[in-house]
Image 1 (cartoon, rainbow, N blue to C red):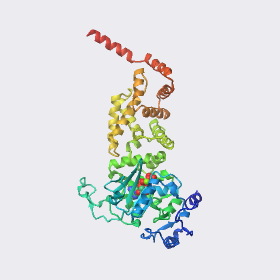
Image 2: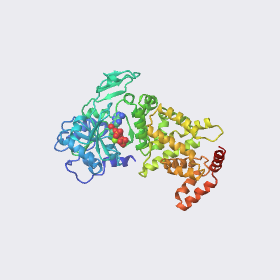
Image 3: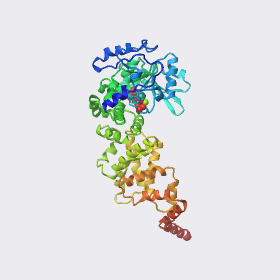
Length: 499
Ligand code: ATP
Ligand code: MG
């Protein structure tokens, strides 16, 4: 496995490229990193290309074109366009982050990120399709149709000079500051710019701090990221305790990358996760909603959730879910497991998944428990379900936000679970016409698969949808004759006559 990865990283010389080096400098063993890095730098023929000369690469490991597997063909043409435009305007610009990491691992990057010494305002002046976003961490989004390239300016280390109290609800004083921390070490403003060397050390994990330049197509590594990529390790740059405190979302990122890449988390980084998981309480619920969705839509929802449980992080995100899934064999726990498997399968097939469906499954176990408490031995009713849904959703909002459009859809998926027990033709037809029918039907099938006794409701709906119009009519008519609606109707008519 390691040998294979080494071949992937450093083997596979590809067809010639413009500006390739004439000699083959060797890569650098760890023990002689600094000395040999300088040697590698010297070995780039004709010295470093213009603009790279401006950089201090004395502590970097530089991998020339023929010793890594990244080809421009694999890079989004829009990202290349942005890199060239920034370079042409006299700025340094590099591909960084997941784009470089995933290409070195021979997988397809989710998106491409660029790091530059141009300030956000300078980037905006160069691109018509640029928008500056974020306050805590200003970045520029370049929009090319559906593709967004994220451009960030090199960040520098900044001392905790503007310190705000953790408990202070009112942080108006932050407005206009480029640098600010809370007194527990959380970074509240991170807009102090620096050099590429500083930028590398401000990134989260070593494997995310690899830079690729279209200037002679070099890969530049300041933090031993290439070695960690070879060894399959997620390692925090710097002191993990300090770096997790600076931004506790990095706890979730460590778990996300570990599941996504099937990498281990390096020991010192791992040891801090359990201990610092409580810091997630200081992250805004809105940011946590975005981050939880990323956890589940990376194609590895099952292993991600298992790691979230293992590292106790899940208890700060989904405490109700954990409480009601202690027995993995219970149908509600099985449903959640199946929904996560289903999410991974759908994404692998290129299908979409919605946050509403995911959250409907995550909160189904506590919803079921609350509904059972409210209903006792009687069958669940819509008002009881609504009451249970309110309670469970309100409790979840203390941990992660859920935008209203998604909570509305979740409630509909849940309510349709009661209505999808076909009683008569009219109610069956109105279910089918419901905009949330498809999601609710998928949910019903998962419940059935999870072992809930639904008296064949799922397969009845499957047959109905597969049937031709005549057969459908027949099935609906059969329902009609068993309908409980008719006697009710007659009773009402008699009352009308009396009046
Ligand atoms: P992917 O896009 O595949 O999810 P990524 O590594 O590209 O993974 P992004 O969220 O796109 O992740 O961020 C781009 C890069 O920005 C990261 O690789 C990392 O270097 C840096 N980064 C992102 N979030 C943080 C953070 N919270 N702390 C430090 N660096 C970060
Ligand atoms: Mg990315």
